[in-house]
Length: 328
Image (cartoon, rainbow, N blue to C red; front, top):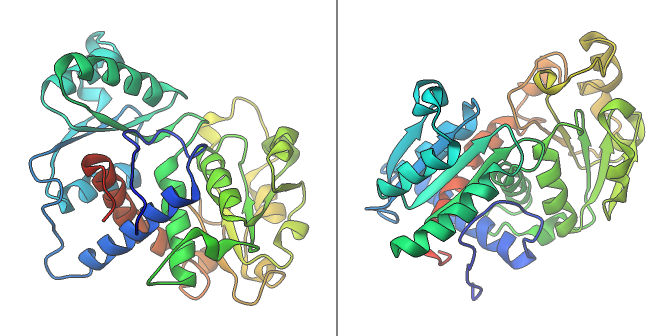
């Protein structure tokens, strides 16, 4: 690969180029091979410090980033707001500055408010210049804004299924991909819209009108459906999203049972899709709501476990590229 990586921060996929997507995918493929070995560790980031600053609770993303950093031989620092100085009145920026003073090289930020990783990245750029060294910031999910690493691992999962050895975004050109569920509150959906439309896929969104505002129809290459059937018709892949009830300030659906009846993924509903259709879910899953348990646990139809596995390789790739500045 002749392209080089020039991103110091990964805050959004909005401005990612096809070449950058392919660098991430093919670097992740090389780390997937590392993870298949008996010794699953490389010295790529030895001596560097990765700080996981999760101001919002998380299981999969936080542990995936921590494992990715350790597989690259980086030292890790983990932050939990409930036991931190935030409870004593310290600001988020002061917390980040403390980790900078400890010698952190890369910060992975998750926050319930959109824009916080961007604010921290701007502060680190300013302070790093004064300190004579740089700190990279990676957005691990901010409010309703974006979740870049989740969309990249989804992309890697899909492209690897189509070409295990050389995954690249061109493989998805013309594929029909349906995204079903709580689009309104989903940062995962927004990041996936950037990556999937960049790949040339045909993206169809389906949800109740209360969870799928019409402004999503302004996204180039995206079609909206307020019923499930037309979105599933002939789809090559279907991604269902969690109902984020913790973010809902009003009753946006009649009931969980009614939502599953109208929008839940089941084996029967997948019969309307392409013959080799596969289902995805970024997790955590509300079983029997967004997707039936038997479908979720069927390895012939579900890519959910593959998404989790892909997450470590993709996050290794991101940390490596940001930490070294060069693709593998």
